[in-house]
Every structure is written in C-alpha cells, then in structure tokens.
Amino acid sequence: MSDKKNVLVLNCGSSSVKYKLYEMPGKTLLAQDYLQQIQRDEYEDTIRGVFETLKQYRIDIISHRVVHGGEAFKQSVVIDEQVKAEIRSLSRFAPLHNPINLTGIEIAQSIYPELKHVAVFDTAFHQTMPPSSYLYALPYEYYEHYGIRKYGFHGTSHRYVMSRAEEMLNRPKEQLRLISCHIGSGVSITAIRYGESFDTSMGMTPLAGLSMGTRSGNIDPGIIPYIEEIEKTDTAGAITILNNKSGLMGVSGVSNDLRDVMEKAAEGHYRSQLALELFTTILHKHIGLYLARLNGVDGIIFTAGVGENSATVREMVCTGLEFAGVNLDREANRASKGEAFISTEYSPVKVMVIPTNEELVMATDAYELSFQ
Ligand code: ADP
Image (cartoon, rainbow, N blue to C red; front, side, top):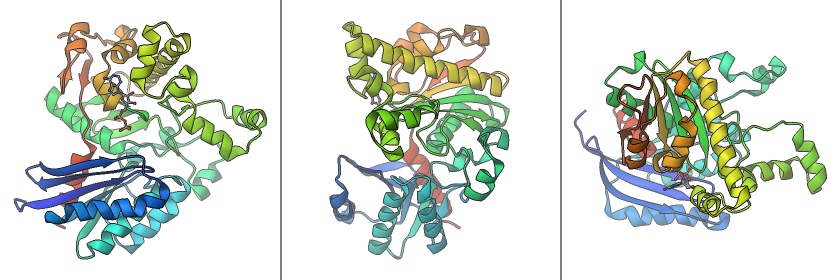
C-alpha cells in the first residue's frame, strides 16, 4: 500500500461544514477549513463552495462522516445506492444529522461521480457492545421490531484515542481495559475492553448519558410531560429544551462554553459554580460505573476540547478515584500539552491526555478501503 492518494475528509454537521484534505499514507495535511453557522437554505451552496475552493487539488477518495449507522454498519464502507438508502432510513434515529450527511454525500457524488466515496459512522465502533450494555429495560419487542437500543456515538474519536493509548502504554490493546472520556461540546465516556467498545454513555440518540454543553444527558423520563405542561409545549418542544437549553448552559444560565462558566465561577457566580460541580460530578460517577463494568482499568483517557484543555476538570473528575488506583500527578496535569501521562509514576491506573483526531481515522479508513 504505498500508492499516494489524496483523501478529502468531509464532515457536514447540522450547521457547519468541516473538511481536511490529506495526502495518504503519509498523513500530510494539504488543506482544511471549518465553516460555521450555516443557515439551512445556504447549506448546499456552502458544500458546493468547498469543492470550488478545492479545485486546485487532485482528490482521489472522499471520506464522509455519517452520524448514525444503526446496526447495519459495524465499520466504514464504500458508499453505494444500498448504503445511501440505509443511511436515509436511519434518519429516524438522527433527524438532525443523517439527512445533512446524506446531502453532503449526494453533492460530492454529483461533482465527483467517478470517485470512491466512503462513509465513516459515529456508531460503528460501539457495535461490539453486548446486549447487557445496549438493551434498555423496555419491552423486548421495541428492540426487535423498532431498533430501540443504545448505539453510542463519538466512536471514531474513542477508536483513535484507544490506538494512541496502545502506543503510549506500549501494550497491545487486546490486553487493555480503558475508560475513554470524550469531553467536548458533546460528552461521552466509553468502556473499552480488549480493543473493543464494551459500554458507552450515549444512547439511541446523542442526548443520553452525561451532562454536556447544552444537553441534559440522562434525566428521569417522567420529567418530560411535566416540562410540556410548564412550557405549554409538545414532546418535540420539551426535547429541544433538553438538547439546546440544558447542560452547562441551563444550569449556569451563562454559557455552554466551559471557559465562560469557569470564569464566572471564579468570580463567585453561584450557578456557574454549581454547573461546574454538577458537570464534573456526573463525569466522576460515570467513571465509577465503568470501573465496575470493566472490573478495574489500566488507563483513563481524556480527549476533545475540554478533556484536552481543562486541567481543572481533569483534576475534579479524578479526585476521589484514588481507591481504584488512580493517582493524578497534579503538576503534570497542569503542565500537560499534547499527548501526555498525567498520573504519578507508580499510579496503578495510567491517566492520559490524548488529543483526538477523528479526521485522521476517516482518512485512513477511506485510504484502506480504496484498495478493495
Ligand atoms: P466539538 O464537540 O464542538 O468538536 P470541542 O471538542 O472542540 O467540541 O470542545 C469544545 C469545548 O471545549 C468548548 O465548548 C469549550 O468549553 C471547551 N474548551 C476548549 N478549550 C478549553 C480550555 N482551554 N479550557 C476549558 N475548556 C475548553
């Protein structure tokens, strides 16, 4: 596999388009951009604009991020009509994401019909979970007939940091139990057992699990009809509140950006202090859950915007895990930059900061599939 190929990694989100062009297998980044706050009616023009900008480059393969792959996709695939039909049908689980992902695929295919297009799914890595992890305690028919189960997300990120942890720890993944904490504007934790996702915090949709920038994470479902009554809204309206007005934003009343919340908290703003406390406590408790699920761990990984940059959050999350062999090196934690160990030398559990790189996984998958 020494042929050089230029792989365009395309991530069409609900209001943004992100791309990176890599020369593979050398992983050389040739071009990148991140276009944000795109309105629905200008979306298609924006994607076409990206291809216009990239005209000066040769593109050999296009790798598309697709949020929901359901049970149909356990790994990345070359896109054909059947794959597209499946992605479309999975829109029922990800109505804000899959249709947009598909729009990106269709525009790219219309401009580059001769190229191989690859889909990389956020859910694929989690397809190894056992039923005891992915089933909800609901009537079993809901799973059998309607696919109601936990799928999990951020899989590409969890997979990337796992492979980096394997290198850092210098032990094959088949021997490792890891807890991977992806803490960005979305938050998910995954229990990784012997190289595979064993349990994860997000659910059928990315609203579940931990509290996030604007998302509530798990709540008592009985709250939903009461919110509908209070707000004089319907179920969709209540879910919008859980998606967009909750989490750090909802509790602090200040911002969904942790930096703003921490700044206010330091000034003594009570609700910001509470928001930070709640956010980190929920993270801490979930680590406890997965310590049990894995019967102890070898490593804990912090990644994504908050995980990579906030020493305070990492310290708050790890404090009180000493009983399980997690001994944070507070100085190393404060000083860490890039990939780093932040546990003490003799800590039985290694704590690592690993900057995520989902795009590189997407480029690598597409490059490898292009030889098939
Ligand atoms: P996305 O899920 O949008 O890709 P990121 O992984 O980029 O999100 O994470 C974004 C979040 O990371 C921001 O909302 C911000 O709160 C947080 N963040 C970034 N840098 C820092 C920092 N230095 N300290 C604390 N939080 C940070």
